[in-house]
Length: 376
Picture (cartoon, rainbow, N blue to C red):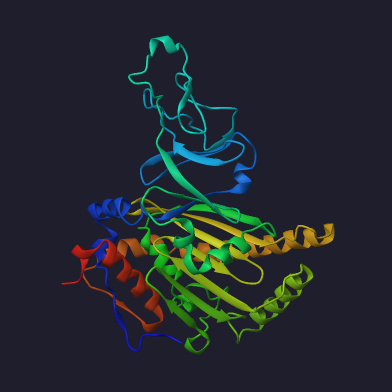
């Protein structure tokens, strides 16, 4: 059931999606204090493995130092060159590609070529800025704000679920990155309402479950949507696929619950779960009208399973990944059109009762960021 008894105002005006100054404020405020999914343990499994990324203007290197994962600025303290330009790799030391300065797992300079020419200004070594890292299951999260709540508090009511469903008995079978011309809030708002399903997903989701089969949870930092499966209960193909999925997960030792749940952790993390999939969708802001989505879909992969069952798990994972890609591409084609409409719109907008999760997201943004954008 929905909580709203009537239509709701679209609390953010169009300029909240198109104003560069507003975007800069988001990056300095709510986005900087959030935890961002940046890697998986599998990407950083060996000593010396590293990845680099640009997050909200910061150049970052995350590296496996053997006992621990650590995150530092990827900019050398000497002459500001990127330590490495590679997106990922393995190397014995965290070393600058320009002059060869090396740094240890505390971020301090360890080895400086011709060090006699670079006497320290103090007795302390030069040190790279460090960032907070935390792990949940196989997912690696980073926060730029040293004063923000820890990851357990940030993930809140679904921390344990994420730890389990992205843990040792689940494997990643699908990972894709998509860039598109739209403000970062556009794909999030699309993902947290089912009103568009009949028009945009006529051959995949086909139709929304409807109010009687919908359960919404609305909280200050998190909303959720739950429904029983199959999603389109009156569609024979969807019912048949759901029966096949139940049979497959039983073979993999999973007790079917027959539920779909999707969670939005404010501001930009989306998690979806069924018996067969655990999906995390991260929306990364690039510019006011440019964003990137990183999708990772996990499936059951019991560590003690036979070879036959492991093959079955991979087949199921690949099938679910292909379905996810089709669904996401159906949404993706709309994002530039939505952004163009926001750029041109002179209307305040309106939300249906079924879009109340967007209204909750807007309330959060206004409370934490958009006092100046409150409707007049």
